[in-house]
Length: 82
Image 1: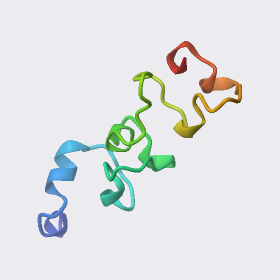
Image 2: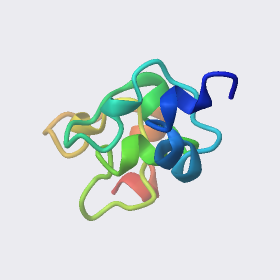
Image 3: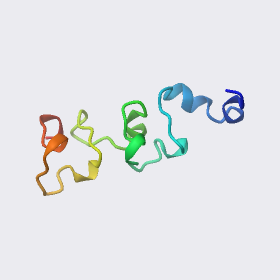
Image 4: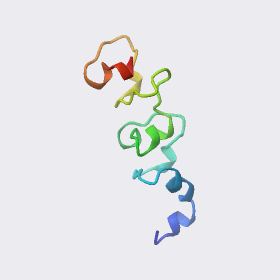
């Protein structure tokens, strides 16, 4: 706030993701799923980049592992993740 949200550069991001606190906001919604803090509800699942087609309620650490031919346990082996 004391820097004017980077001279106004972060205004739109802060309005869209007010609780998303990451180091590189430009990675949100850049077309590539970024893991970790970017792939969270607060950051809109990386601005939609980590959405899994056909499984809108499936949110896992590594979306590319869904339907990759290998059975995994935990959050991957749930009804939400098919």
